Image 1 (cartoon, rainbow, N blue to C red):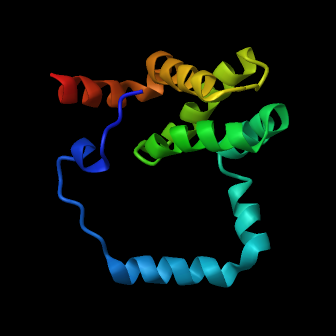
Image 2: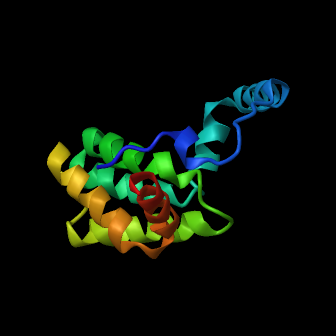
Length: 130
C-alpha cells in the first residue's frame, strides 16, 4: 500500500495550538473512562470494528482499524459515515474475517479503490506519483 506522509497530503503548513490541545486533553481526561467509551460507541467506526473483532480478533482490528483511521480524519462533514459504511460492506463480503497482514492490505487496497468516499486520496496519490 502506498504510504503518504501527512505533510505531503496537506498544502498548508501544520500549526498546532498547544493551549487548545491541552484544554481538550484535560476535558477528555476529566470525563473518565466510562463516559469516553460511551462517546466512542456513537462513532461510525464502532460497529464495524466491533464486528471485525468478533470475526477476527484484536490483531485484525489493529491492522484494519489503524489502516483506515489514518485517512478517516481527513474526511469532510458527513464523510465518516459513508467511509465506514463502505468498509463495512467490504468486510461483510469477507464474513468480517481478516486472517493475515496480506489480507488486511488487500482489503485496504480494495477499500481505497472501490469506495467513492476515498476519491480525494486517489487524487492525492496520483499527484504524488505524477
